[in-house]
Image 1 (tube, rainbow, N blue to C red):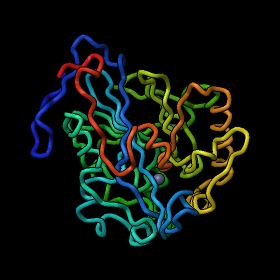
Image 2 (spheres, rainbow, N blue to C red; image 1 turned 90 degrees about the vertical axis):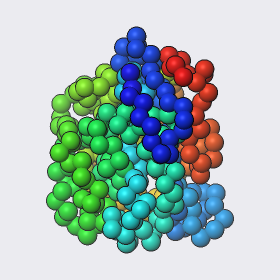
Image 3 (cartoon, protein in one colour; image 1 turned 45 degrees about the horizontal axis):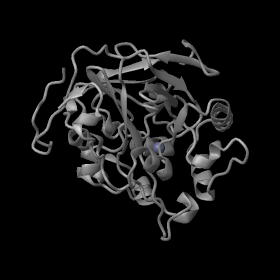
Length: 319
Ligand SMILES: [Zn+2]
């Protein structure tokens, strides 16, 4: 059962999970936008904005996994909101102009759902870019899981762009990181080297998708309605996975080209994701930044935080 800590900003109601559930049963999935970014380029970026800047999501997934919470990617965190100039690069702050609203951080949205930061026992990262790892500091009890090659490359801080995107200022959780080799594991719907992660449900899987970064991975979770694959930054535009007519806004095409660390593998993995969508439409694939995907999954516009469901609608959960 979760501890039910009261915090100043948490709603009065707190949730507890039923004791009789096994850890991997009844995994409920929440789709959270953990701070939008507003890249220069408007409609050329998101295909729908009418101003100089577009608007992209930062799609994170919260999993209620039996008696613990697992967070897939963190988005920006409280410290990024409080002191962006100290934590983030001037280059990306100007390019992306993130909407720093505290209520949109993962930790504040988790509190809206009735939980506390310490209920999050695991964070799994698709990769270490600043807009995915910024919230790590907000979850002091969580073990952090990612690919070994991601850490190995990020800590080198080799190029100018590496130093802008990988921000050691966000890594106070470093002693709690667990890293995994890409070569060990099993196959999952045609993807190789897939593995589950020690200490959590066997139905949360790390799926290597190298390209955007050298240790980039998707994260698959079997929720109440089937498999969901958070593909991170393996693609940016929902239409890139269209099996018949893949397409991407010009702005996002340039951005992906600018940011990828292995162009060939990124293209190959995107093609594999397209095949996965064609052959297994029952698997729900989402990326980190497409605003339409986020809105469809969350069931509300990009700019509002998670809306807690009434307790009676949550199977296995007692108010
Ligand atoms: Zn990203």
